[in-house]
Amino acid sequence: SYELIQPPSVSVSPGQTATITCSGDALPNQYAYWYQQKPGQVPLLLISKDTERSSGIPERFTGSSSGTTVTLTISGAQPEDEADYYCQSADISNYVVFGGGTKLTVL
Amino acid sequence: QGQLVQSGVEVKKPGASVTVSCKASGYTFTNYGVSWVRQAPGQGLEWMGWISAYNGDTKYGQKFQGRVTMTTDRSTSTAYMDLKSLMSDDTAVYYCARGPGEGGPTGRYDYWGQGTLVTVSS
Image (cartoon, rainbow over all chains, first blue to last red; front, side, top):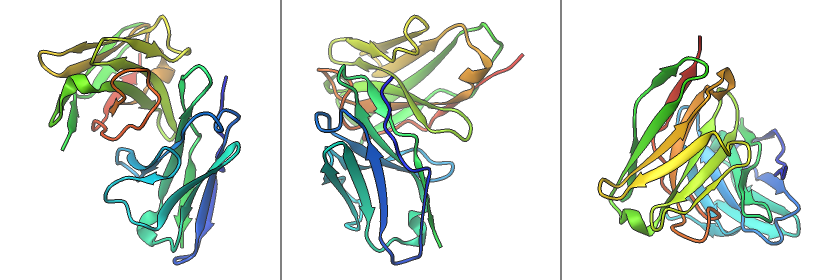
């Protein structure tokens, strides 16, 4: 079955840039979406269609795409950005798939 | 602002079935669809399937086909997810999320329910 591959963890110091990747063979033909989930909370949509930031999401969150990899970049990460991040896309038959998630630590 | 409110905690025995409801408000229910996503304890998000509130079309994840049924009641703007033949590894928080209304489940999920914990234990 189709998989989206994310690094299990990323760690940065406050103010540094955090980069979270998501790789999948169908990504050149399917949009990607990014979600943030803090402990005990529901997922929050950050980015749609690879690059479109949701209303109210800080500008330090940006999405990009290149070939079979999409990337979520957090420029100047803040302690409150500590969370799990998930990419979402679909396979060639339009079955939705989530990446395994990346735990971001900011300390 | 859209809102999705789910039904409460469920405790079930192996082999039983569970129904989780998801009541929508603050938007036109029939313009969108609802996907169901689950999250086992300490694990990631897993997409289960989607239903269009516009025309009732469904698309179920291959892992769940034959075991899950998704329906909507347009008169009450409520979506339902039935999962049968429960096993212990179905223990998870089940979320509903607003998604595309037609054409399939691929798209953004911008509103999420609060989640419903389903525990399967003998």
